[in-house]
Every structure is written in C-alpha cells, then in structure tokens.
Amino acid sequence: MAEQGPKIKATNEVSKNSKVANPITGIPDGYNAHYGVPVVHHRTIGRLRLTRQNFAENRVRMPGNKHFCFLSRLTTSDTLVVTFHGANMASKNQPYPRYERARTFMKTDASFACIADSTIQDTDLLLAWYLGDQKHDPMSFIDVAVSRAMKKIGASRVIFVGGSGGGYAAMRAALRTPNGHAFLESPRLFLDTAAERSMRLYLKQFWRGKTVPELQKLDPERFDAYRSQIAQAPAGKIYYLQGLYDPTFLWNEYRLAKELVGLDSPLGTSPTGSVRFELFESETQKHGPPPFEIFKDHWRQANEFFGTAVRF
View 1 (cartoon, rainbow, N blue to C red):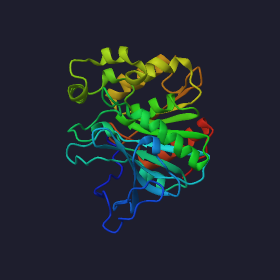
View 2 (cartoon, rainbow, N blue to C red):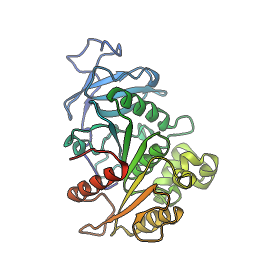
View 3 (cartoon, rainbow, N blue to C red):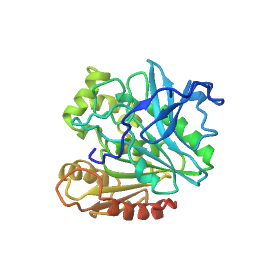
View 4 (cartoon, rainbow, N blue to C red):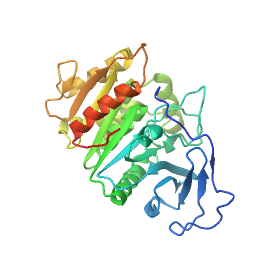
C-alpha cells in the first residue's frame, strides 16, 4: 500500500540492561529504539498479559519460532483503534514487524494497537493480507489481542483501520468483532482481483496448487469476507474511503462493493446503513491514502457514522 507510516527500523530482542524477568510475563523485556518503548515478550497467546503497561511493543511466541507482534498504547478509553499495514515496498523492504498509522494516532489521545502481519515473517513476501497459511490464521491471535486490549482499557467499541491490502484485514476483523467498525482507505476487498504477482507468490508460498476461487469456496469468511457476510447487514459499520484518481481500485473494488449492497449513486450510505462510501481527490493519479488533512476530515465523519469520538 502507498500509505507508508513509520516502521520499526531496529528492535533489540532483549535489552543489554534488561536481564531481570518481567514480573507479569516471567520473561525479560526488550527495547524498541525507534519508538522508545519496551518490548514485552509473551509465551503464548493464551498467556498474553497487558497489565502494567501503557505504551509497548508486544511479541507473542508462535509455532515455528515466529512471533505475533503489535505496538500498543493502552489507556482508559471507550474506543480502541486497531491498524493494519498494506504491502511492503520492494525498494525499502522494511523487516518484520512493520507498523502503520502509529504516528498518526500518537497525535490523538486514542488507545490504539498497530498489528504486524505475521504471515510474511521469514518470507520474501511483500503482501499477504493477514491471511496466514494452512496451519495458522492470524485472526485467531488478533481476536485475542483485541479482546484483551479492550478489557484493559474498558472499551466497548473498536475501530479497525487499514488501506489497500491492510484494508482487507481491517474489514474482516470488523465483521467478526462485536461492536467492531472499519475505516478503510482504498482497500482491497476482493482477493480475486488482487495484483496477480502478489497473489501468485502468496499461493506458491502457502497454498501450492490452490486457486483463489477454490480457497474462497473452502473458507469464505477467510478468503471472501465482504462478499460472504456483508449482505447480513452486520451490526458494525464500514466507512469506505476511495481515491477518485485510482482507476484500478475504483473499478475492481469500490464499484463492486457498492453493487453488492445495492447502492446506485457514486457515494452515500448503503440501504442497510452498514456501509458508507466516500471519494477523495488527490493531486496525481495514484493508489494510496488521502493527504492528512483530508484523512482528518473523513475520520471525523466516520466517527459520527460509527457513534464514536476519537478526535485529532
């Protein structure tokens, strides 16, 4: 995705000065030098403990010597914001874990969690839509992390934020989370229209011999979330913000998403009231997020639509 927020440049697994075990986890903390926060290690997702921490990076052990990672600032709030990143840039190829929109929401008083896609860890993939592999669906870990974070801060609602490939994950998370809403920026909602090379590499890595239609039929919630669930008029709402001068996504995603919910006009709210469609103009013909001032304006409108109050 073109929206490239600040990423982790370097993270020490265990700080040289931190050999004393964390009293909550029983494991020594590390240190994230880029954000200046501790790295709290957890043995399993079932033993994820977010008490006694405000701003930290959390790393949870996964099978295969991998880690599920998220950066979170958790203070008392009625609403939790959860962000997902899009495609990595081949020219930069930032290492795992990558976090987006952290600096954006640090400008607010919001409680937030920025989640890295564990699917791409130890691979050459630049994008995996948080889909996981045949043995692991990252959403099972994300569900737990979101639930624990909401409980810690006393939140009753959550806004999932993502653009491009991260938009698919944000939308999917919202559809499976009670009181979950989604703020999407030029998202990929239909995996069958994804960039051919990116999808081919993902399938080769994890689902050799399978096609997207076969996976959608096998597990529609995972691989065809919008099409399989949006007709049910979920309780949560989706704010869909699309770049007007982004022809591929405008045609393959925005147009189809509107048709599926029965909206005939170029923008507006679906008949069920579940999805609001909005367009923004950019200075060039490109795929990516809106300028910050436009983002803030639509973020305000989205909060009114959701009934939340996370402000800049």
